[in-house]
Amino acid sequence: MNRLRSLLLLAPSMLTIGIFMAVPMLVALAYSFMTSSPYGGVQMPFSVGAYVQMLYDEDFDGVQVFTPDYLMIILRSVVLAGLTTLACLAVAFPAAWFIVCRPPRQRQLLLFLVSLPFWINTLIRTYCWVLLLRDEGLINHLFEGAGAIDEPLPLLYNDGAILLGLIYTFLPFMVLPIYSTLERVDHRLIEAAYDLYASRRLVFRRILWPLARPGVAAGALLVFAPALGSFLAPDLLGGGRKLLIGSLIQLEFTSGRNWPFGSAIAVLVSAAVLIAMLVQARRGRSAAELAA
Amino acid sequence: MTRFAKLLLGAALGLAVAAQAQAQSKGELHIYNWTDYTSPELVKKFSEETGIKVTVDTYDSNETLLAKLKSGAAGYDIAVASHDFVQILSREGLIQKIHAAKLQGYGNMETRWQNPAWDPGNEYSIPYDWGTTSFGYDTAVYTKPVDSLKTFYEPPAELKGKIGMFGSPTEVMSLALVYLGKPQCNSNPADLKAVSALLEKQKPFVKLYNSDGIQDRMAAGETVAHQVWSGDFRRARAQKASLKFLFAKEGGIAWMDNMVVPTHAPNVENAKLFMEFLLKPENSGLHSTFSGYPTAVKGAEKFTDQAVATAPEYLPPKDWKYTFAPSCDEKAIRAYDRIWTKLRQ
Image 1: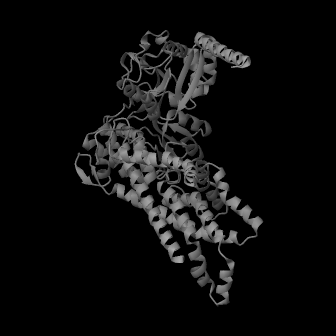
Image 2: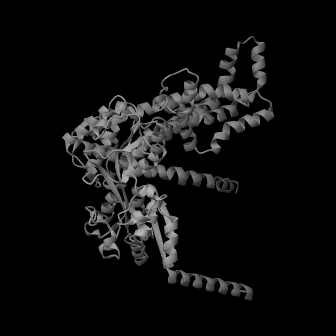
Image 3: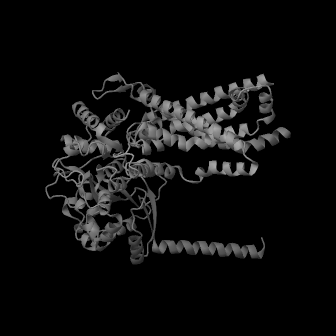
């Protein structure tokens, strides 16, 4: 009886995950092993061509040659997503600790402010950065008005602008999980450390950081995974001069009319994220066992 | 069942029958069109004249239209498709022959738009409106006369780093092929290499590749030259008078949007009525004013907002060469995709 009850209670969330996550991923997996139809879509026969294309592509003469293009795109995306994660961590950790140390009412307000950007559409927020950063934008106008520069600074349409856009978009995803772990830290531990003549650095390293690690790990995944597949910031702030995985997938599903290849890249990204999550979960479990 | 419930059921049934009868007597028309492309005023006028109830559904790309018609569960009577997709849709059997040349008012159409290459004899389609693709630039920044696309592919110092290109590979390739004087939908290795080399050489001077927000960028001076559609550029020029649209000596790209009737359209006769309605100059002008693009109907300009009817972007020189880029086969598309990824890797 009890078991049936828990099954019933679990059913809605399992169904949601199954329908909205597992099924689309399986569809993508199936598509990635098929052949593209002339006007988009897929058809039989079964083929591993999409995966081969990541490394070996036909050149204009129809010869299969090794192409580093897609590897470069994947590498650049991973590096940018990694930098985004590190930068978010560097900003979010002190911010979360600051919030934890405020009185409860201020805490509520500050948390509300952190989640405030979610109330506005990401596209609009990203486009606002274009208006701020462009040659005729607010920042360049301010500097020019102050006489600091003669020529507008090239702030937009480069990797730096993409990085800024990614950090800005995903920062709240890092602050919230770190906050939730730091909030539960027993402050008496810190007092005890100080009593034992620990330096501030040592307190951070031996007490705060280990206790915050689950939150940091969760935040890192929440930032890294979407940053890896993001295509709004790269297209708007990067000016589409360089492709990232997200824009590449989008391209293959639209004007490229190569759904199997788009699916194959999507499967690759999902697999990478899934593996990272599994490793994380296992490490979390062994840490918990150790603590027990 | 209580009496009350029986009464209620009877009333509901009666209402349903009445509603159906009404719908049948006046008829319906379901239009599937690009977003912001159907004039509400025009639809209202059509409904008032014919008593036909019109519903409009919208989409954002030809691919969406294709997917929707392919899925079979559409129920649309009229769809609006680009000229290259008219070919695809007819080849796939997704639209039906309407013999547009027999429609009342077909003769109102300018002769140059009758019997087009993508639909010989206008069997499947009738033009909706049209435009061209070229480069536009700011004559206040680059003051020398321009007659060639070369100015933008191999730009002078004033334009370097301030050029905007479209964000879609097919459109970037098709204009590059016009500049190089090569055929469209090209899969000739030598030509493809030439296109690739041209775009690679141009890239250091390109500020961004994006088809959205061109109007704003040109008006703000963010870019001083941009690959652009005539209609977008007209709006940008309205904000900044020094902007000029180039009708290059090499020619340019043109496109035509067309009304077609899906194979399983429930109200074919009403669809034809709507087409005949739009072939009248006064209605065509009403549409042109709303969409901001010229139509194919003679004399429509008299009923069109003068800012649209007399826009220099819409009045190419008589001998200007324009190419209607056809839909390319898989081989060319794949090659374009390769040039495009290589350019942006």
